Length: 232
Length: 86
Ligand SMILES: [Zn+2]
Image 1 (cartoon, rainbow over the protein chains, first blue to last red):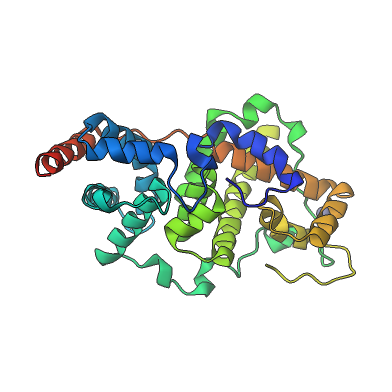
Image 2: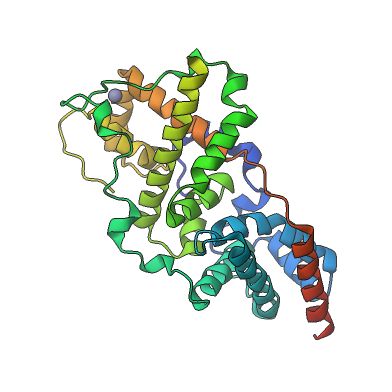
């Protein structure tokens, strides 16, 4: 769900429709009927219901966990502890947040209590607020483009949407600073609403948007390199 | 979120810093109008926005990473222990 979707967002929503999880329409503040069914089944001992939950959220839990720890093993440990925390906490899950938000909050708390890097205490200056979205040298002194980006119509669509293009985007996301990676992963890769991202990562609206902006800007710059190579 | 000086056209350099606010629906009506007015007259910023939309589209198509089967097995074991202990 997007808060107050504006008319100009329609096109973007369409493009993202295929990847938006089916429960994205539930209000960020409450559990969906699907969430409640999953919780009831797991509490009744349904192993399949637990496996479904794991299959659904484990990849993004791992991506987010890697924002807190440096290597895959440590991230897997944090995620494993998260699932154990989920099982322990499930009997007292009240549905006041969506199930996935609740799970990600357990991960974030887990990462913090393990004594790993505390992402929320990162000073605002390191949010990347001082970074320009585009290399300043690409603008004339008056602020107009000196070297504008190439229109996409110069490149065939199958090239733009190729596995290579996706690989470049994935690579660029993997190299982002931790908080930027967390935010873009949940918002754009997983298709969460920005309200849910804020709730799961405990970020203010402003900080979340700054992190998202820096992340998207850097990933776009890498995609532009690919577009330029493809058009050359 | 960002301070915009009123009564003046946006520069391309400012446009690229407003793209996320624009796409997230975070600009007020007046700033959105200024943004869109600039866009209509600027090929460079139009291409920039197209590239950003492509970025989002590609990000949303990333394949989920496969779960390590051994890792999954450990979780299922943990579940079984938890279910038995309840
Ligand atoms: Zn422009």
